[in-house]
Length: 199
Image 1 (cartoon, helix red, strand yellow):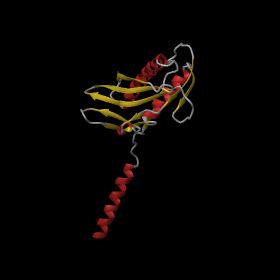
Image 2 (spheres, one colour):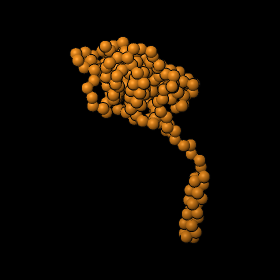
Image 3 (cartoon, helix red, strand yellow):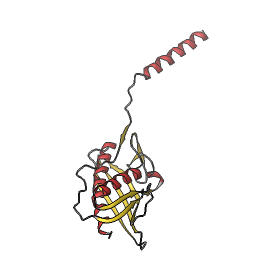
Image 4 (cartoon, helix red, strand yellow):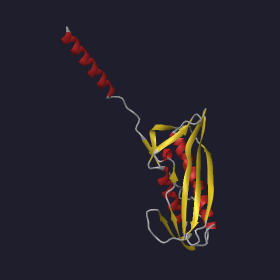
């Protein structure tokens, strides 16, 4: 009798586990920040200077590839099957440096990985980078503070940029589209701000 019960239990376990293998789970999705080709074309006279752009600093919660959203005050949650291709600070460094370099308004644009004599250093602090969901609506918040340092006189000027974008949907993909829109606006604004504050 005991042997029959054991065989019956083993048979049930095998049936249960074999049934699980046929379940199709959704595959994880990875997203990135990417500017459109038309973004940020500004006709300005080229300046004979070199600018170094450093990777933004941020708090521990944003130093991850997780996509954060908030449904209740003080509570951060992440999407289980969606993530960024890299940390937001690394993606921001890439799009900012490529965009400022692509503007052709400076002799050289280098990043934190390159050692070179520079005229200005652009540092930043990523303060907010999350999605807010309330009922059937949501938006994203991008808040970042920039510090532009003149290497000759060590003078520093700073400015905080804040963007609030509504999302097309209350999921991770809707947030990613809105983040890309906000980053495109940031790139246009930062190009002009840096240009106006360099000699």
